[in-house]
Amino acid sequence: MLSDSEITAKISSRLKDLRLKQNITRQELAAKSGVSVASIARMEGGEIKSFDSFVRISRTLGKIGIFLPLVEEEPISPNEYLRMMQAAGKHQRKRASKSLGIKKQEDKGW
Image 1: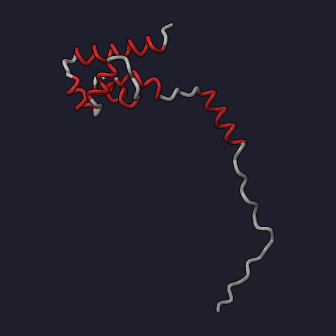
Image 2: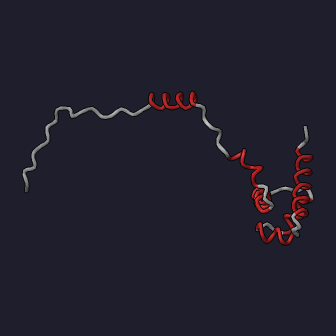
Image 3: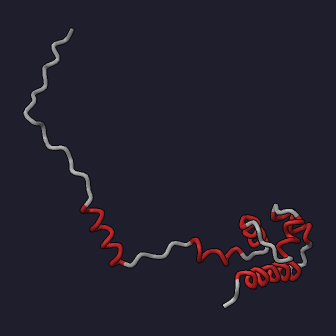
């Protein structure tokens, strides 16, 4: 298994490779992504400090799809859905009972 620093180094290298394959300069990537040139240079050098910047650059380079498994909700199985509905039914609030025999006073006017 790779260490955190090895993963960061590989990701940084991959970002630079993607940028170069798309023939984009750091200045162009900065303009398109809204991330400073200095931040891009640091990321490509192995310092990924801002997740927001990393996501912006990934989106700009067309690789935002790598994050989708992290943000998609897992589908609920029919059995789990049934259990959730049954559990919700047990905790329903009870309605107030009908009147307790208190009669409304007639509006006698002023």
